[in-house]
Length: 329
Image (cartoon, rainbow, N blue to C red):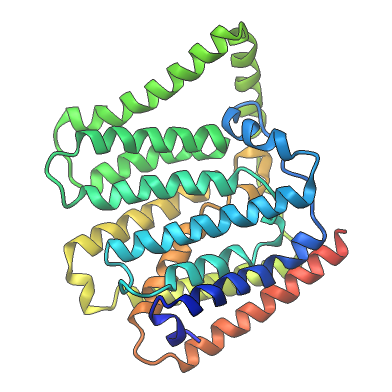
């Protein structure tokens, strides 16, 4: 199975879209309403309001956003040398990891937020090999700020911005201040918009109260979902240990990019405690997990046993999705 996705032929893209559709089909047939926006998510509110009363359209839109993010994810990993340039491993594991979380298969802030974060990742990966990165740093901060206005939990990635600067070993104060300026610029635009609406004070109070109320221990997933999480973590830690045992890891650029992924993963764990403890809306961890699995698959010389394990995970994920939507109809 893994070897099949070594080259990016058209038939492989068709197979991946069919695989994604199979995993999402229970969600499409038992479509749930779009996740309501929190007070601090004005961009997501704009996206969700047109489809709020059309569950099946909203789920299809979520599916399309997931696929679009997957294609972008694969292109970024390929462009920056983390997977073979002609492979579709990034899209494969994006579909598998995203398709194993049935609670997340609704229109919700996670999917558009991941698109924004992927733009930020592309900039972060690119900056190591450039000399003058002032404009990239500003855009980097803007993408993270836009992500936070879509998904309130994404404010934790302000910390990730500065972890990336540390990994890049930027030493000038100006370079550390530019992303802060980008964040402030985005916030000021939002405040001006609220002011022109004559809702500045009201929205600030609502945002503060809503943000404080959203900090809570996440709800515990069901038993089958916990089994899926455990299986996924086993795959991830196997991939992680394999990725750091490769001779290719001596490439400093690759090591920097992997470090960015790892710091993002650690910081993303904090997002689970935000947004009212709705863990399925803060599954930002799927990005670094999918990336490490794709890097692992791209470096394998023998694929028979790994393919069997991935097939087993896929079958369990499909069974879990069917069970989840049949019991939560």
